[in-house]
Amino acid sequence: MVSRILMHVGPSVGNVNVLSASTVPNIGFASPEFNHAMKYALEEYAKITGADSSYTPFILPGGGTVAMESTVSFLEKGSRVLIVSNGAFGDRWEKILSRYPVEFKVLRASAGNVVPVSQVKAEVQDEHYDAVTLTHVETSTGARIPLKEMAYAIRPHVGLIIVDGVASVGGERLNAADWNIDICLTASQKALGAQTGAGLLVASEKAVSRLEGGSISSYFLDLRNWLPIMNAFLSGKGGYFATPPVGTIFSLKKSFELIEMETLERRLERHRICSDAFRKGVKEMGLEIVAVEGARSNTVTGVYLEGIKIQEFLDRSMQGGVEFAAGVHEQIKDRYFRVGHMGWIEPANIIQALRVMENSIISLGGSAGKDAALAAKAVFEKSLPLV
Ligand code: PMP
Image 1 (cartoon, rainbow, N blue to C red):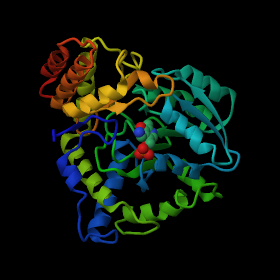
Image 2 (image 1 turned 30 degrees about the vertical axis):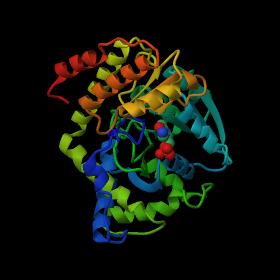
Image 3 (image 1 turned 120 degrees about the vertical axis):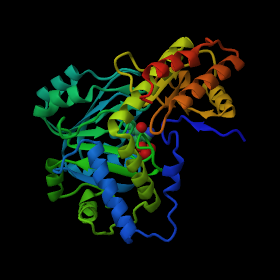
Image 4 (image 1 turned 90 degrees about the horizontal axis):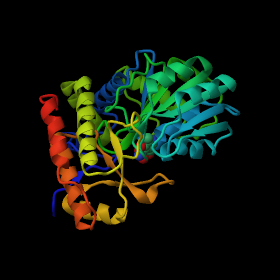
């Protein structure tokens, strides 16, 4: 079997130390080792999102959707929510909130675009909203919003700013406290590069104070149940509400240790350079990128592929040793595929991905320039020793 590189949008490229850290026989969730790992992971998550000590971090069993749905805990019956959706994961908020007794409105952008800051600002100035949901990087297209600018523009007018950072935390700059973001959530398997199995969030003091009222949340996802447990871990003790994902927490701990060693600044720079090199290669192949110029993330790229069946391309690439992801945006589903370049991504993975893309396209009768890997290499050579 060819050893494969996972350039899916999450889980993405693995790190053997991080993945193997989750194998912890005979260490349970009430052990001192687990208490320590959980405290460390909670504190490091707050740090990586730029949350100060007024924020409370949570780690829940599950993933990104669990973290998203748990934010219903901050709402009450009749709360009004503005959903800013740039694609499939923005739309997921609508699917979640339609299960609860809240009101919502959705502002949508077409595939590859983002709803402009001015439009969101005008909406929140005109109407009262208790919360606004923003998707930092829309994984269905790779489009990134100007989060800082957006948060500054809407802050004076809205209750809570909830950010889905599932495809951004650990790969994109994000500063919850400075940018006045109330809730920032992610999943363990994305740009943090850990095992699947956990949803993470930080919540501002203002958000946490809303947990004092009545609840419209489900039992399992009600953060009222998780708050005392998280506080117990943060104070060095343990606690139980429902079984935590023990192995994933040890894997997260290892991720955060490696992030500390690399430093967040260098990690963000590595993501920026790898994505730049990848896109230069894509351009060299004559292919179009889904996200519009100015809104391209450092973690996910959607690439249009005309004249070739996407599934055949994905299968051929898989045989060639690289797993990419299918398109999921309804408007363009059959015309593009997605590439994750996040977590432990490194230059060799980008070069390999471009070579495999080229070979797959040519072997399926399409045309692709021959110099994609060279174009990417030129970016890396210029930026060494940064990556
Ligand atoms: N939001 C975004 C932006 C995502 O990319 C994803 C996963 N692709 C989710 C939410 C849902 O996360 P999960 O699949 O871990 O539940």
